[in-house]
Image (cartoon, rainbow, N blue to C red; front, side, top):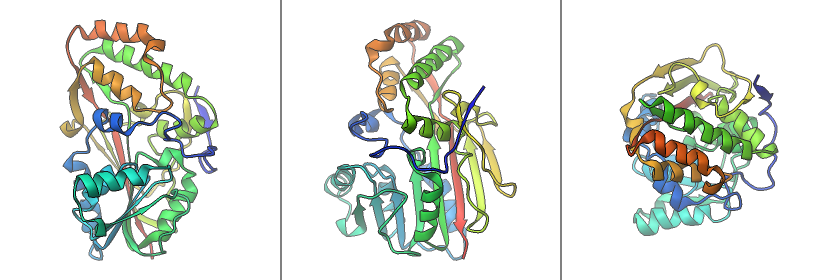
Length: 312
């Protein structure tokens, strides 16, 4: 039986969840997390720019980390606000975006601040992106703040990809699931109860009040027509999907397929916090290696994109 959790209260962390203290490592993240394909950004831009009133003056990437999404936003918007609450993350984003990628410094504003309270002026942002970060927030407060900074008619894009599935090798997938259950058993406490409740719901627990948001669309990719693939364990927040929202279920998106070996799978797990030492589950890694039998795993990643338009 699922443990039902609330999400409309503060995430109970004294510091942001995906922190260095908890084991976050951006070098590993960039090496082992999926690369956002152009189709990912294409869906965001299609939703935004199809609106007659859409403009491309300013985008804000909230919970931006090292600026992965910000980099692409810079190709379509005149200004990009890069914000994250963690110490050092926006400094790293500036280094990667400006010093290494040599994008114009004048294009960016870097802010160390959380999703729930921004220094950005009200009604000045065309597009807000919130990618791989909502589970660390007070969801209702964050969504309210997104609406405050957006212009009337502006776009909110909330996205989340979850653990990839091993396809075509059921014994390997069974062991892979056991590895993630072992991880979930380590991820305990109020902070992780809060985060797992949100991700396990496939972000269906994120409510978008009708008075403030219109044209709400939830796009589920490679999830088999349900949110079950998002569930790592039984901690689950209740759905707050409105009856008038549009739901789109897309299968077989090859942009979210990959083939990787055992070392990559170990590296991918290491990008999740809290970290679980490899030696602690060595028996499971050995079993997975045997199930793969020297072959790479065929991987399919489920994801959800939530779009909404700020009402006037």
